[in-house]
Length: 330
Image (cartoon, rainbow, N blue to C red; front, side, top):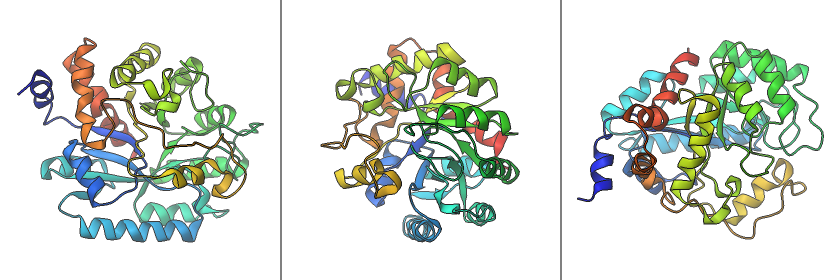
């Protein structure tokens, strides 16, 4: 057994949480997550979809839970994460990357909460009824309807995600929300990119008690497709130096098993309109060393190489996310 294997073994009973996975979910992907000893993950089940389309997606997820009950379980409260860990399963937290599913009806939030949605990003890149996305030319801020959405999410105990949200809409949300909010998957602005967050934006959300998940998505990283896992740890260290180690976690933004057509769908406004970002020619690779979900535990030896303490590793690996969920979920 090599040194890396010994290092990973020391943390085998610790909680590992991924703040964002948007893979092409299947039994093989769930097995990869289990092999990577991921205790729980925020798994995207809606991006551009409307109410009916999101209900269809949840029907598919119900099938996943039924036919893969030996591997996964549905997380609806923080205690479910403990049970997933005890049972050796992957806890699936169903989340959205947009609020398009509620259309213009606030009451639909409660319907989806009852169906198990626990995290929702307010906007995805562009404008919707709630506010502006980070790629929108002009950020008009949180709408009045958006304020109602934020307060209803607070009431329900649904976590508010601002990863793809514009800076003014994000600031408005942080000020309106009665609960801490999160960037589930983002990077510090070490590279100029609309999806990356400035130090001021990172401090703003952290000062309100929020959580920040570091995204190991190569288009956001300074070295792009040449990035490796150690570059991710360097990025995490930068983030920790800005906001402290108690409010940082991992939010990989894993896109495993998707083909280029899925990215074209994501890159078009509302899924079918203009390209919001220049269309990818190929699926962006994940950083070397964490190309697959099964390699999640590779973060541990990389953290050790960077001189991280045991306590720091345990926090970033999953405990910070766990405590954040425990604080918000009712």
